[in-house]
Length: 470
Image (cartoon, rainbow, N blue to C red):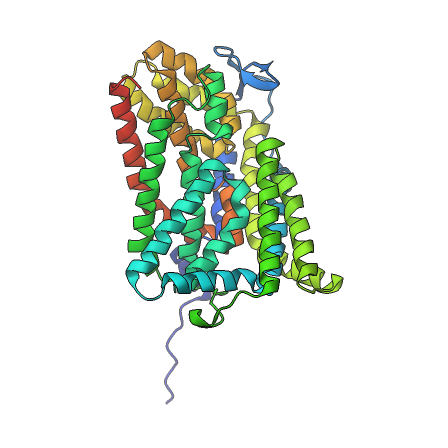
């Protein structure tokens, strides 16, 4: 008599187990946030502050909040309408990811960057010892941090793939390069003593001298970059990364040479970056203009390296295709803001959170403010927009509880800036991750542990500053 085969587990059970055992894909994760925000629209009443235009900018009038009674609840279909609308709203970030992906695919094809990094790493002896490897990581993190301080966040997106190549040259995974580049830029921008986008706007609303109080913020950014550098050297280099597109140097470091054509390509690249920075600082350029510069750089570099028009187009398309998933994540994340705005609950959330500060000791209020700003940043990911909405409310609160306006601005900057490194609505960071080809789901468990000591340092320094009359 033949034996019956053992009963197999039902397919449905296997699927259920896989569903709950796997970490959600970034698309799933952000869609879950979107659904949660949609459900919140039925619990949080619609409300609005009155606004006025001062110096060409719209700003909130304090004590003008009113609940709205004529706002209809969002239909379930609106949840899905918000997704294409979010992609339309975030189109500038999507396009810079596609164009930058094409640019670096063309640049990679010339071999110029790889050759330069290979020659530099060989001269530094980066592969000869852990000490030299760590020196490159520390130096790279601080250089990226400087760009974040001086230039901003999204303006540095073109430099992320360079970090990946540097990591490859010293024998590390792309995760090390992305953490060095995105983390350094993010920390630099978050705590920049001279950021016109956050500090400048907030201080103008608080009627403070532009970039005053820079000493405390400079100390914060230097210490946090040091923490990030040590974290990369001690932990990130040991994290195993299952990379479906590993970046590897094509030959041994001592074999690299920089050719005359490489120098021409690098000169074009650096000229393009210099033009972009000049436009940012002197003409107010932002994502659209930067994207146009990237496209021009790709065309000039392609022709300088001998590509035909058809070959150039093919390489641009290949580069754009490689970052498609990351670009779509940015669009999905932007739909969260669409739901919040259409339900008119952003101002209600701001009003409710700011009321927590009333009758709170100054030092504790500074810490709580940074937490509140971090929560608000999930809903209003633009630093300048967040300053325009929250500072007219919080500056009077600071006056009432005896907190200096300078400390309130610093609390705003910490809360707004550091959260950009891990919230799913920060389009600039998501764009950089897409270009570095590290998923948001992989990024979170890497960046979150180092946020703890950085927040602790900033909070301790801020509380000390409160007692010192900063």
